Length: 423
Image 1 (cartoon, helix red, strand yellow):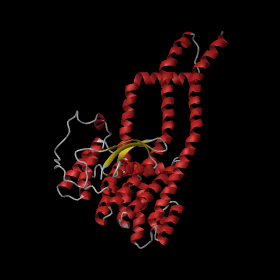
Image 2 (image 1 turned 180 degrees about the vertical axis):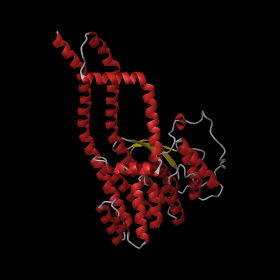
Image 3 (image 1 turned 60 degrees about the horizontal axis):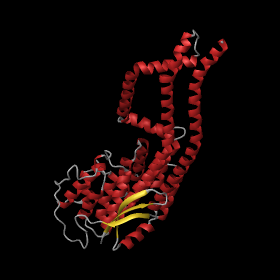
């Protein structure tokens, strides 16, 4: 079946690129339209092989490579590690190719050509070469576990064993898509506060380094005593000008020390507890971690993985040691014969709503569906809170910025008022 490369936009205007299969362009276009995409361009892929009727392809040499000039420049400008979006696109395209009846090896070869991320491209190439030599797909991915996440590797292994490989890839694509959407919302919500904070810091440094010193000589020649606020800002400016290199070294050392501290168990635990218990963002972080737990566990259970191995894997994936400790206690409760809901309720981490939904899922035999519903509810609640918080933060940040500017202006105007009084 032919493969088509497409560029399209969703209803938000976000541009997307990928591949879709279809017997003819009209069928591929209809499939994209059913996904809610507006097609920008659609063309048949005509690479080294058309992948029709599973005709033989030329042997693949894993040692072959492209010259520097033959690859796009953006290949070499990729980030060090693939992100959530990269794995989302990879799983979605992998599922489309295998669902079209294309062999695993040919699918991996096509994915290698289509992947723009340099590190991910090389790992796909290595996986393809191992599959060609007779290794299983899960084993080939596990060798490259430094890039591919544990969730993806274990679910591919479960999909191979259960004969539901296409369905597992679709689940993985949906999982990474939901995670990516949540990450993007958080980035969008925190961008404006970070920008305002950096702008305020830059304004303060500029005023105390470049503006205030120009007035200092005038005030000193007039023999007048400057207000405490002006003296403080001038002192800060002199410190920055005289010892900027020392301050820079101290800053770098502090960043390095914090990174080293976060690698220790005590430091990581303190940081994770701080994230969960902070006044404003603590409840949001707790909901995000809980949603990730529910969606990941649902994805694993839906792929056929048993409960105890699923909990072990979820614990490894969680980016929070406090949640990991609660998951470990939950597993101990299940080993003692408790149902999942009671084991979750024994800890103080998971909210009662999630525990109740898990209990309903266990009683009705739809635990996977209830976990997915709980994750969707928590993600929607996080999205709502972030939107409300953004709308509240904007005027507060504007007031903060105005206060900083007013403070600096006051430090200049106060001595001038004293000059006017002397005249």
